[in-house]
Image (cartoon, rainbow, N blue to C red; front, side, top):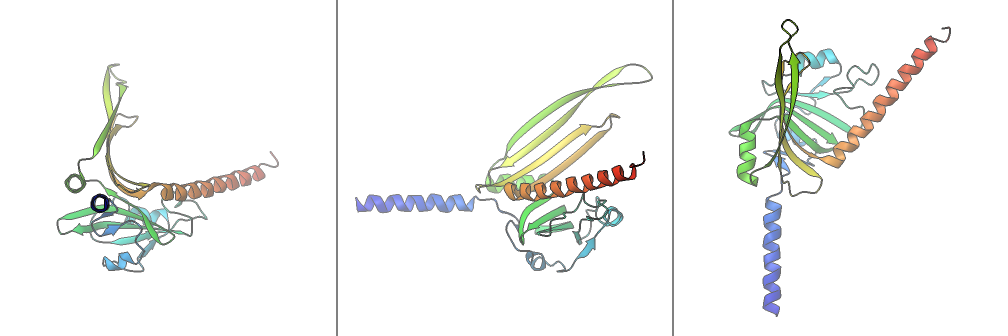
Length: 239
C-alpha cells in the first residue's frame, strides 16, 4: 500500500512538473509579472524618452518598427489629445519598443508593454509567422477560430457591384495559467471605400488585470467628456 502511495505521488509530481513547463508566461526574455527593472536587464535605458502628445507619438512611435529604441508614453490628461494612446492611471507605465531581439533568431517589432503596480501584465507586438511557428513548436499547435463577413460594394459610375469578404483568424495557445491569454489575431477588412486593410497583432496578457486598467481609463475619459460638455452648456447660458 505504501509503495502504491509513493508511486501515485511521484506520478502527480511528474504531471505537475510537466504542466508547469508548458505554462506560457514569457516570450523570450519578456516575462509576465516581471518588474520594470527588467527593461534595464534587457539593455534599455532606465529613463527612456517620454512621449507626451500626439505630435511626438506620430513622429516617433506610430508605425515605427525599425531600430532598437524605447519610449514611455504618458497620457495627456489635460487636453485629452493623448489619452487615446496613454494611460492616466498613475499605477500604470506604458512602454513602446520599436524592435526587440527576443532570441538569437527572433526579432519582434512594435512591442507594447504595460506595467501595473510595477509588474508586467501585457505584452503585445506585430504578429509574424516566425513567432506563431515557435509557439506551435514549443507549446503545441494553437486552436484557430475563423470568421468571415461579406460586404457588397456598388460602383457609382456603372451601378455594378462586387462582394468583398472581411476575414479574421484568431489563434489561441493554451497558456496553462489562470487568467493569462496567449493569442494571435490576423485580420483583413475593407473600409467604406472598399480599400483593403490588414492588421496582425500578437498578445500575451493577464486578462483581468488588463480589464481593470481599461475600466479605469474608460472612467477617466467619460468624466473628461462630461466636464467638456458641461463647459459647453455653460457657454450657452444666454442661448
